[in-house]
Amino acid sequence: MSRAGETIRLESRADGFAFDAYHVKPGDARRGGLVLIQEIFGVTDHICEMADGFAEDGYEVIAPAFFDRQDRDFQATYEPEDMARAVALSQAAPWAEVVGDAQAAIDALQGPVFVAGFCWGGAASWAVAARCEGVAAASCFYGRRITELLDEAPRCPTILHFGKTDASIPLERVEEIRARYPDMPVHLYDAGHGFTSDRRKDYQPDAARLARLRTLQLFARSGGGRGEGA
View 1 (cartoon, rainbow, N blue to C red):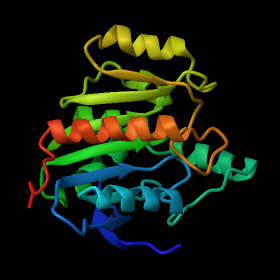
View 2 (view 1 turned 90 degrees about the vertical axis):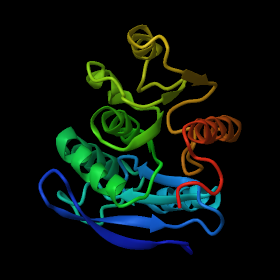
View 3 (view 1 turned 120 degrees about the horizontal axis):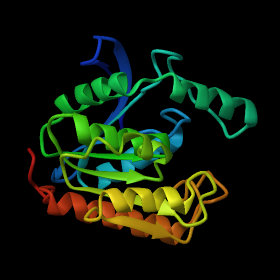
View 4 (view 1 turned 45 degrees about the vertical axis):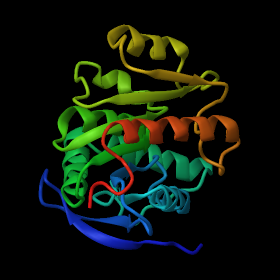
């Protein structure tokens, strides 16, 4: 695929580890920075395409390769063997390391800086919103492991997106989040897991567009106005 961005190297605030990231700048007036957090599959073509799309909306995007410590340049398919490896890598990434890597990406961007993450990245985005400095708003997509982090409240405006028929995230878990944070917008869609990815069988274009619109509206309300964040 043809990509609009480039690969850069950042140094983690957790332990100094040097990791790669996909970086793309907006071609038009800048709205702010965005740290885009991968699914368990790595910084794939799909993630880079999403980064390019947000850049077209005016955001300078960095998508860190969070699994570089375990397997540099890892990218997985949806085949069972790759899926098993991807799950193992996600479980081998402590939140403290993830947050340190994310902080390096945040620090590399001029504000306002936003965060959006998908699948494993949805929970990582919650951790980043709770622990990192300099995050203006966060949008978390179908983060199954958010319930592990409920004792840590996001310190910035945060919205969540879940599929009503997501077998990996029962609605009971979603209600647990809602009960703990009743004022936080939690959006449910007629969709399954991974509904924003056109690579997956659960892809739901209407739900994906609506979730993306809500994300862009959140960023705009939180300082991401056209031409701001030079």
